[in-house]
Length: 134
Image (tube, rainbow, N blue to C red; front, side, top):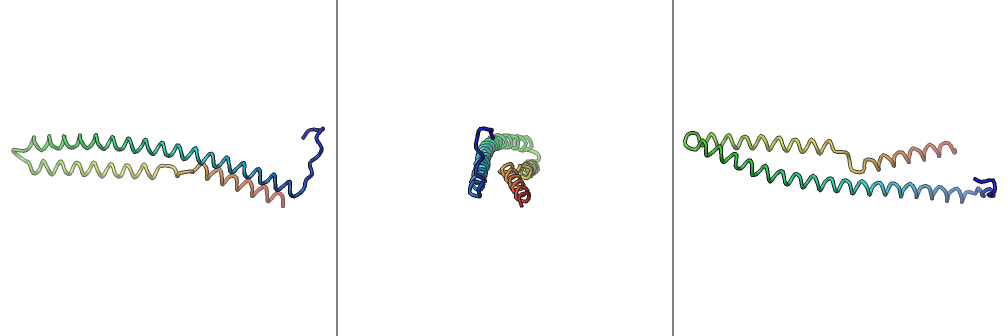
């Protein structure tokens, strides 16, 4: 406050107005943060889905031709064993991929984690400010 400025009238109405203004400012900041996180999460999800789709198609063709090669290679001697071996290999790879996808999903941060953390900090600050006032 400048020395030239007259002192503000410190009524309850002014205090509540400043409190509401501060709360709205904090709420706006948190909403903007949530929006930024939402956009980032959406882009990451879209990229992840596109990569998964491309990988699945490429792996499907690779596995199809590898399996056909093994079956044709052993067609005259051990065709049933070759078919069973190829099927077993596909099942093992598929199970590993599903488990890996689950692990990645479990390791991902919760959506809006930063926003929730900031809101918790705000609540703690407000609590401590109110307890100091009392």
